[in-house]
Length: 466
Ligand SMILES: Cc1cc2nc3c(=O)[nH]c(=O)nc-3n(C[C@H](O)[C@H](O)[C@H](O)COP(=O)(O)OP(=O)(O)OC[C@H]3O[C@@H](n4cnc5c(N)ncnc54)[C@H](O)[C@@H]3O)c2cc1C
Image (cartoon, rainbow, N blue to C red; front, side):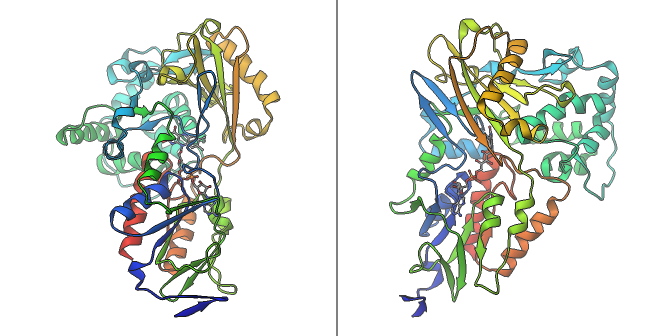
């Protein structure tokens, strides 16, 4: 027996104590599921009233489905296996074939981004010079690269300025709401970094990856994009449903954690001891935590400096007849060179059925990011006229939307910039100093939903083994 404040706690072998998980987003829920499957007891804490973190899908009458956070999930083999194991296979919606089509704004006009090498060489979107640079890249020799560099420099070295401005830049806006000149090549796109390291040419790396996929019996091309009839929130709901009753403690934020002999004690439940703690939290929440006893605190406060630009998503519903464009694509992206107020627009009702009532279409306009953070912070009355004006030009919208929903993310996506190693070192040092503490998720393991699911598995394995 040992005492904590006025309460006394029975000591147990630490492997029989539960593991605490802070954060019931996709990362924390995935970690919880793996630990439960390994026979461990787990308690997941989250101040929110529903699990899922930033994955939020809401139905609005008479038939709108609004995704405030992520809109699409890449069905990697691991995601496909999970969807099957969670019993969601019959609810899986694959994006229609039109979603392969992506529009890029160039010289004020929407142009199709070529999706295959033959389409690229036929396309009028890029100059002959750029096409020759791409051909030449195939023969680029392997040379050691000793230092990280900005993604823009890395990509420009391979493919030149035009492909950087009209392919990479908008792509980076769509994923990170970021700026390739400030992101780290090594951290933001580790697969490109590894591809160059192993093959010299990114094109040869891509062909080698395609061959390896074929050898594993996986379908060619990028993974399908999927969702569910009630939106992506079905995924965290299904993950949460696999956990034993009493596992989720919602409405509960943990602010302080103390290592104690053979375990951990949290401020929310001083009478309980935990074998280990998983922090599946975004950087700003990690920065606020108080770790360890007064006088010997381990601080993660510097993680608050990790840039997360604000993003606003405007979900706009239109009568079909009020939009000229066929909306035959995933959406459109606006390269920075075009100076558009929009980062891009998703064509939600083309991607998946059930996103808009009959006779209507749903679009999501993304604003802000690193490019225009102030625009994301303005209220709807300021943003809506800007979005409507741009959509009238780009998509031929003729009347105002009949449904509007604004989702604002003050700190949306972590930017893996050239200083990212510093943040990773802070995290690794805290784990080293406080055995039994495991930190992961987008702050460290990649920002996409598949990366978060993989992070959950990694964290669970580390906590189980400790
Ligand atoms: C606007 C937006 C669009 C995106 N679009 C896509 C997309 O289309 N496809 C894609 O793959 N990815 C997308 N992403 C990225 C992806 O959604 C996220 O990286 C992922 O959902 C993060 O999951 P998480 O569990 O790590 O963190 P979060 O979802 O942030 O969950 C963390 C949880 O921790 C809780 N918490 C905070 N403080 C505490 C505390 N002190 N104690 C306990 N709990 C606490 C929070 O309440 C929250 O529920 C998008 C992200 C955003 C913001």
